[in-house]
Length: 108
Image (tube, rainbow, N blue to C red; front, side):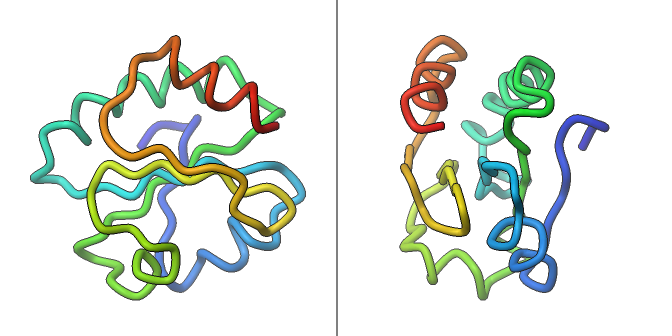
């Protein structure tokens, strides 16, 4: 994680995501996942671009098994955008920086 993205867990999900005043893009990922590794630098760039507008959070599905099923996460990477504590949009799989920015812009 960098200073631009935060690592969250099953224990911190409610506080960091649901109770957040800022929209949160949650990356459901795992260390062994190739596409997850490929999207990580894109998320870092996005986090810098959207500083103050959205928060980027990463949740390792292997270490935190309780949260993913609550949101229907069956494949990774899965990106879920939360706003006002609610799911606003979901993106499954590797996505380009341009497409990811379009995804975010259309939902915040």
